[in-house]
Amino acid sequence: MTDETAEPDERGDARPPRQEQEEATTDIGEVAPGILRLQLPVALPGLGHVNCYALEDERGFALVDPGLPGDAPWAALIDRLDRAGIALRHVHTVVVTHSHHDHFGAAERLHDETSADIVAHEAFRLMWEEAEMTANEDSSSLELTDDEILERMKERFRWTTPWGTKRTPPPDDVMRMFLSGGRGGRLFPTPEPTIRVADRAPVRLGRREWVSVHTPGHTRDHLCLYDPEGGVMLSGDHILPTITPHISGYFPEADPLALFFDSLDRMTRFEGVTITLPAHGHPFADLAGRAEAIAEHHHERLDLIRASVDEIGEGSVVDFMQRLFRPRSWGEMAESETFAHLVHLRATGDIEQRESDGVALFSAP
Ligand SMILES: [Zn+2]
Image (cartoon, rainbow, N blue to C red):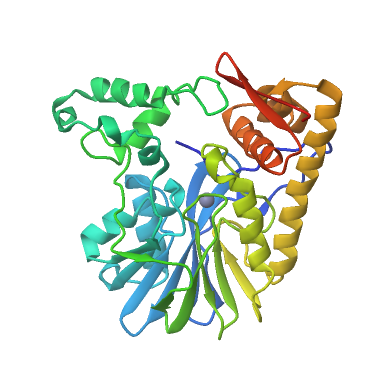
């Protein structure tokens, strides 16, 4: 499952290279007092690294978003910890900002090896659990051959999207990569948070009194941490410096874009944030300005859909996707993002939806 944050390209001019695409360097930077930035390699669409922040206190270290599952990412994490002078046994807490595998991947292994607590939002849940993929979980899969496990997992990926197109499983090599970190035919070592925090809960880590900020949109369980005294925001994928996070249409009942707009608006109302630490790209100063720019990007996309409705009359998600995105971005992620926007316009009364042979069709009301 690579439902991750690469922003599908807009139509229009070529885009400049994005910070989030830069390859991970081995540099260790102190980005705020007592907070180190470790860059871990990831190779996902639009992403070259994930930032793992190490927060030091009298008990040792907390790590925020420790990177992908699997042996190679684990080796990279150990390398960066080594360069930062952090002994693995001194890691006492892992914070996971949201339920995407480039963020939670190493959490369970850290928990196994150091008994570290795993902190996440109380809604933390993996997408494929919600999509009933574990409903078929079967302990007998432990006795299956690798190929049988692969086929079984691929079967779980063949479902119909909420907008009526059939999903296809990822290629075998990607599936094998997923499976390599898992146990007994599970996709990943699924982290089970030991500390689930509600919105506005206090989180004491790294000699700072953080406040948890639930920011649904990119995922429903996305968590930011705000330090009012130090003026620091750990923003995860909610606010990234030069790309906009993917908004998935997989759970349309929630109007994910409306949730995201609320979560963006909230970012403009925190006093005294002087540095924002994103999960990809470089730290930046203007949190409110960046949140407003991301909201504007989605409003432009909504305008484009409204204009498209006038032109094409009734259309499927694929029809609207082709108006919003360049051909090289067409595919399930662009469809999902388009659907999230259509669902929002349906909720605001700008468009109507009907079904025809299981396919969602949209038109002017
Ligand atoms: Zn991410």
